[in-house]
Image (cartoon, rainbow, N blue to C red):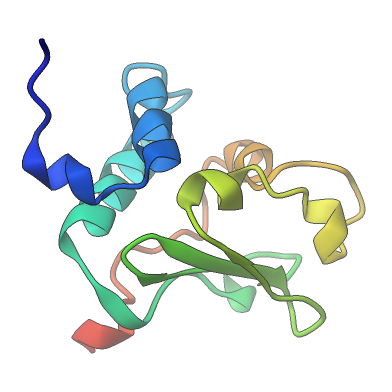
Length: 128
């Protein structure tokens, strides 16, 4: 029987499955950094004041992605939209068209297209 690391018990089942599925299947080095960093943040870094992973000025369409608490996320495009997701898995599967983007593309597909440009890992407001 496989022993489960107690730290991983903090992760939601869908994020745990996502991290396991992605491990070893990254499409770029930046994707590896993204998933490994976010996994560690979800396990180790509680954020009550938002971990600003991407802000509107970080990209050409005004998309933002921020983590709150352990593993909740808010995302949107500019001031027009803001959606709450209970996991990274849910956030990455979100259809950006519903946020006001011009095409039906998931957040994960959009991040991959830009090779995660504009994502920052050092803007947790709890640590400022």
